[in-house]
Image (cartoon, rainbow, N blue to C red; front, side):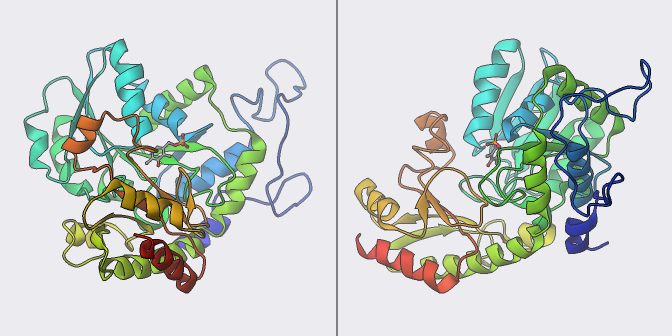
Amino acid sequence: MKFGTKAIHAGVEPDPSTGAIMTPIYQTSTYVQASPGDHKGYEYARTQNPTRTALESSLAALENGQFATAFGSGMAAVDAIIKSLRPGDEVISTNDLYGGSYRIFTKVFEPYGIKFHFVDLSNTENLSSLINDNTKMIWLETPTNPLIRIIDVEAVVNIAKPRGIKVVVDNTFASPYLQNPLDLGADIVMHSITKYIAGHSDVVMGCVVTNDEAFHQQIRFIQNAVGAVPGPQDCFLVLRGIKTLHLRMRAHCENGAKVAHFLKSHPKVSHVYWPGFEDAPGHEVAKRQMRDFGGMLSFTLKGDQMDDALKVLEGTSLFSLAESLGGVESLIGHPASMTHASIPKEEREKSGLSDTLIRLSVGVEDAEDLLEDLAKALDKV
Ligand SMILES: *Cc1c(COP(=O)(O)O)cnc(C)c1O
């Protein structure tokens, strides 16, 4: 089945009790049993909820995985994956990682004895020197946030697999429409559903998808034991969002390309980070592992002055200044003070994230209006 058909049909069945074509919002905390242990597969809503079950089936199908588990946020999904590790285990991750992931790794899990290394994984040669017997996981994002670097998932898998190291891909930036890491050999895919999958900036949610049944059972156990589950209403909203995921992603990509080319040719812009340019460092890998180049891009201004960056950040009106990404509306952000503020300045600079970098999440409005909005803001510089 092709992606758009899966987005509309996978995982969802007409409701068995009424035939309702849309999965109902099962707003219930418990389920009546005929006799102790004699139930219809549902006992208590932390453990199972039919609206969540439908969503999990849909998410698994979108990522070409067998098993998906939904969580109350992307961070709860990250938390569950790391809780599968034990003290003494080591994780190698990218150095321009999502700030919240960096924070949970270093501030929450390091004190429990799990060790994290951060390197530029767009050069996979950096991996070998960090791998040792304790390395249990490689954690990557591609495209990375906010420098939109591309990591070759198959190259990482080729190093990790023979050593029994699990490869986790945070696929939030690409969305399942653009990239399916399990097909590239990754063991685990994680999403902040909050972004492209939900797509309408009205839900916070996350998920873990895998083909590894033993790992899935471990994640299910953690989901039930810890309890960071999404509510049925939010699951319904995400199921609804998924039905247009392919349509939205096509529009995000089309607009992303127009904005990237506009900025690249603008006299006040010094550099645009977007993998669709033929001379972008990860272009060939992106072409191989992604369906298109996405609607996320970052740029810097000539002169690299903070006041100039602020004029652009405050000067747009269609691009709203806000955290987050992947919604239908365009957003502009300042990673150094917003999404990546939890990463220390020296770490940010080491990874090439300058304080004047501006990030765009290009929405699905009409491109002409978006370009005009950016042109006006750049005029103020
Ligand atoms: C937003 C985001 C997260 C965290 O997800 P929440 O839903 O906000 O908890 C993790 N990774 C990436 C790449 C993100 O953009």
